Amino acid sequence: MNFGMLLKSYSDDFTLATRLVESFRTHNVDNIALYCVVPAKDVDAFSTLASSTVHIMSEDDFRVHLTDEGFDGIRPGYINQEVIKLAFWEKGLVDNYFCVDSDAVFIRNFTVDDFIHPDGYPYTVLVEDRELLTDPDYYTKYWQSRESALRRIAESVGWQSPLIRTCHGHQIFNSSVLHHWKSDFLQPRGWSYLDALRVAPYEFSWYNLWLQSHPTIPIHTREPFVKVFHTPHQHLESILNGITEEDLARGYLAVVINSNYARDIKTVALSASKTAALAPYLSYGELTRILGAKAKNSLKRIAGGTD
Image 1 (cartoon, rainbow, N blue to C red):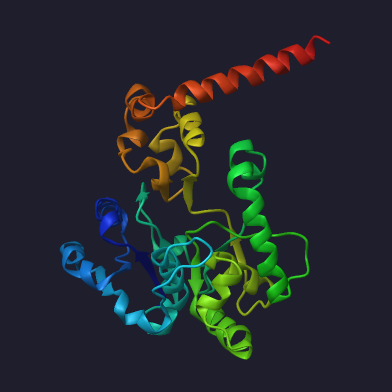
Image 2 (cartoon, helix red, strand yellow; image 1 turned 60 degrees about the vertical axis):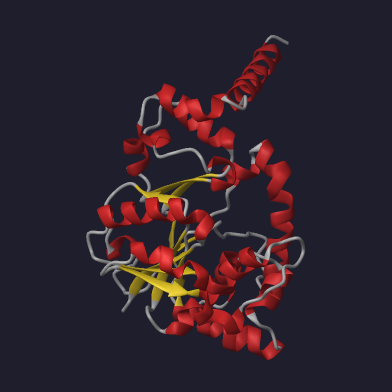
């Protein structure tokens, strides 16, 4: 099979995964297969989501690659989900697989052609993320440490350009690229997938920078398939600007409201009235903070214009 999707999930994300699978079934007009990998203890619960296109697999199928210990303050479960994404090609189930997260929601119909170029090779999501570079909140909390890690990956794989293009997730992995990364990069160093992640825990950037420095397949660049709201104020700005699910669907196949801050924000935030969409934020003052910041910046611009 040339194309499928991969979901790595677990019991804490069962509600989110259920929502994702429901949206997958609604919009999957090409009967694309979705492989959902979960811990062995969660297989029975997730089996309720199984169907002719949704297949539940146990983490134990990947046990040889996994760890029971975290590193650099990262939980073993988080590390293992990265490893499984990198190792999934070894099962030989699909040539190309789109990695989708539990907190994603598909918002329009999709086909294989959305993900695979007419020549049979996958599209590759590569961006510079300039909008995040200019976001003060994201820059302070995440950008600087992430950029340092990506530079370590670039140096490791021999990527010479100062330009770093990668993605945060929702990439299509090609089995041939990962096979060559393992045989030509990991194995000569005596490395496992875990060893690479110890250098930098960004599985998609290992793939992207290896592919760019060692182009095993044609690189057909695309912008992200999924709109990700990385921070609360990004989502709030979208709501305040009146952007609806219909608007998002013109540019994206799916949406992620990052579950690290929005686990209790339902899909109503994508489709209901502005008042209903804002409601989940009002309880902890995020709306006040962002409106205050926007007002402050506006006043600075006005003051600057009168000098």
